[in-house]
Image 1 (spheres, rainbow, N blue to C red):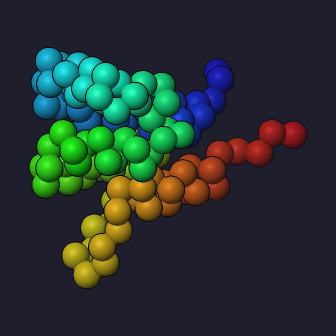
Image 2: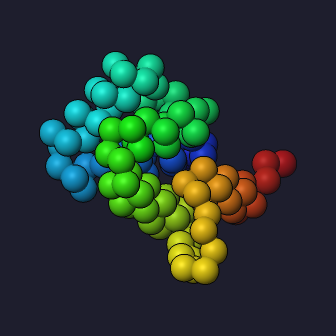
Amino acid sequence: MKSKTFDTVLLEAIDQALASLGESAKEAIYFHLEEKFKIAKRRIPRHLAEFEDGLEKIFGIGAKYIEILIMKQLYQTIGQPLNWNGQEEFGFTEYVNAAQKTFSRKRPMKS
């Protein structure tokens, strides 16, 4: 069995989080990200800041809700809890980077 890359895991988490809003909403979000912000779905992992900015321009303050859905799904997928401490304000990109570090540490080393 081929192990998944973090980019694949991240894209699956984004897809599942957006699907929770409804299939039509998910497709509309991907469409607007690509058409208005030139961020193709497959490029999201390498353009997180632009993805976050695009969500904020589309949804305004509501983008935070979508980012939280994505973060929860991502941390669930990698098997780590999302510790949301109201006293610490981390942005979407910081959470994804922390998840990537956790994911990288969890992967078995190839001999």
